[in-house]
Length: 373
Image (cartoon, rainbow, N blue to C red; front, side):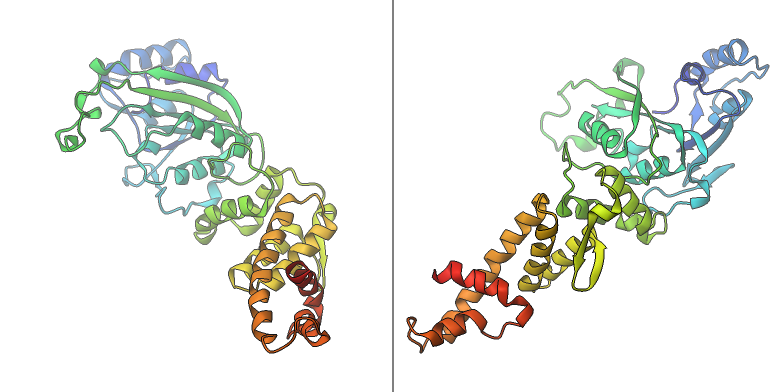
């Protein structure tokens, strides 16, 4: 992949003027065959006297057009800033400093393309453009992934991007190296060599309009503000936090923004330990459940439901925890009451109070009634 010979024309069409700061995810060269179009654009659209022949670094062309160009890669090329998109460790000094960030033929070569997507998001200014031109169909022997149309929809939805432009660009295979589409090493896949699948690129340009950290796309079309959904998103961003590229505070702000939460005062829970954000209490309840303390977990979920009865996820989790506690308490009560007559008061006393701390007896009594009637 790489830049097309019409790049300078497209930049002008999208309102990117000379002087803009451009960031490029992956070092690029223009092909010798593109120089005629490039030179014409420089002369007619940018009033530049620069002329190029042969293979030319993108940096030279874009700087000749008056742009401030920086490239990010791992190839130690001259004037290239070293960034490993797989490492998730990005120079924060670059955040919010680029008017346009390009991904033209890079993300398809990554096993974890969301690293590049995060970097491009973070370094682009609010109001700036994030510019992708990568394979979407075919190219069976070119890279490691073809991100689907649904991926691009989710990427835009989760990050609140304005879609400035989006189109499929069909590929004329006769104009490309056939090794992009098949190699003998792939012959172990029966039928692949004879399968004449179309190849195409997606050219999609987003405008970053919300000042919040990157959120990776998930295969959930309409994410609801539930603890389970949010935990998945927070966990997916934890490698970026561990690498220092994001902070927990930035992630928390993004979650609040994504889920359009109301004012903090309306999203808190009052527990015996004091006032806490609802998500923090949900996380504590989930942690208690994972640790096997289902009674304590149920108590927290019940507290959330009492104060936020519209919190569907808390109601669901409370029902689950009560079911688990009921199952465990039933077994325990049967053992403790094995020598007692179920009809006498001693049995009922054991059923209601057996070794349960006083602050949890209300839950156990309710469960006991559901077990024994």
